[in-house]
Length: 157
Image 1: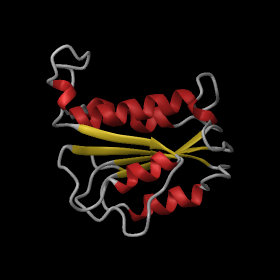
Image 2: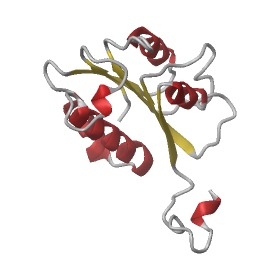
Image 3: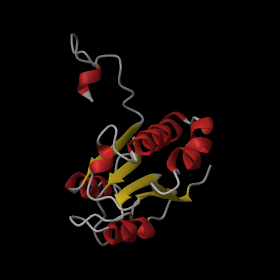
Image 4: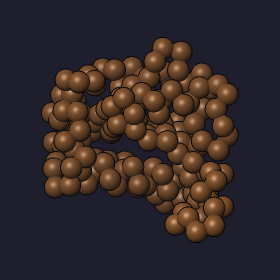
């Protein structure tokens, strides 16, 4: 948070340290999920868990919006692990499935599902961090592409 106030730092004056989201892929996804427990900072407003999951007892703190992104054919972190975490959340959450995809090829530009992942995560962050209701309403359309993705949502908008 000090980077926002450090003279000469390229980030100085460009960070809103009162509204933060966490995102991570694979082990980083587990780490992100682990941040949403009791005692977390109120500045941490939303999370994106990509090809990850949560540990037992997680999501015990105040509810926060969470977006899960997972390939249905992921052999490294099976989709069942991500789904179990999704079902344990207590607040608004959604699950973007990349049909027939593995551990992260959908994160590569030009690959099937990449456009849906980028649009969904961007609008999720615009909605959760900036209160952009238009972005929130776009989420289902952003996420869905027949034969490529599926989207479930328990988001309160």
